[in-house]
Length: 265
Image (spheres, helix red, strand yellow):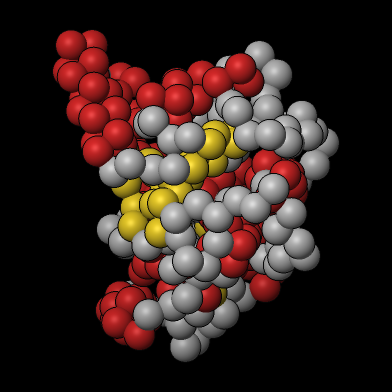
């Protein structure tokens, strides 16, 4: 069967780290269908990751947390608006890399003639997918990168790189260097980055443990600690400042591209 879609929607509603790990799959889609227009629907903060990686023609940023936690009447209105926007774009192929019931439903309501969904027991609505060949059932023992690529198995994408790649822009590198210069960091000692946050508090290592690690790195290895944090870690930063070594550099206002530049430094 010859399959040549021209307007693809990829639903990639994971956390920031999940989207980074989905980049090899997104690159494989881009490689498999070079003539197609690829739009990635993604959580607001993660849109910058997809854009920086250059694996899509466009991103459709969605405030998933706002939809989940906001006023119900407003969430219903925003969901309706999202469905209308997706239908307006007339996608002919939808790929759902995460397969939640609500994202499967969004793909179904898109009007796309072909829908390929990850198969996740108890989470996905498999009957809403209609691609002729089904992907394997999600294997949680596999690395996330492999699980996302498994979703694409029916497309026969071939051998693709498993390494997520994010280019670093010069202006972002300069911005990071300036911040480190102001903190007098980066020349007198090696730097080590620590991010104490997590997508959910239950998955977060205690701040005290991170602080202990920071003190050990400074004392035993003469390293300078850089503490990374985002908007959701504001309270965590206040606690960390009182427990981390006084020499710790706190970078909690970086953009996503600047964070990538700092990590690549």
